[in-house]
Length: 180
Ligand code: FES
Ligand code: FES
Image (tube, rainbow, N blue to C red; front, side, top):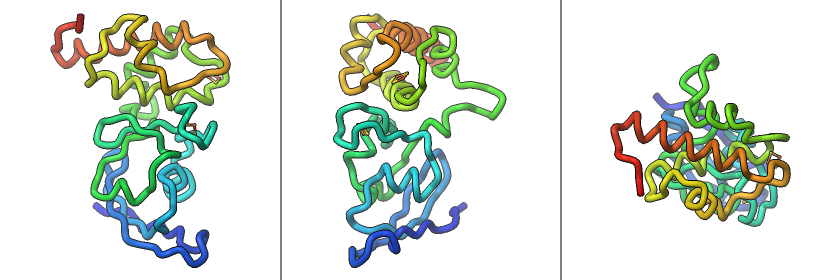
């Protein structure tokens, strides 16, 4: 099924626009976007996915992290048109229902991996990408893998503990051996 078109051309006077087809959280989307539109602006303003947060706008903080075909990317640092025919996953698509959190979200809740929460969608999506990366579920490895995500509130202890647990739970659900 194709969702209604999103038209952002009127926000960018004089900039050429082109058609963009992509999938977002499992749904086909068709948009008409200016060439210079950033992915974060398409997600937030065009598609209403406000969980993709803008912290720095310069590819440093990771608050805008989403998955592009399963790989973590910073949505403030790529053009919307670069997502053509790709699959974007955001925090809004993670929980299986409005009543049930995803195991990675549950781990963040259990380990108090957030305070103000502004950075949290980016951390959770970065953690989701880690499930498929050769990142052992150890504090040292997780801290290293989190090099592109910043939190000004928590001190990171809860975030790291949550991701270690989330990686362990999700890999076990897939029948994967723990990574050394
Ligand atoms: S807003 Fe994208 S990395 Fe900070
Ligand atoms: S919880 Fe506030 S910035 Fe991370």
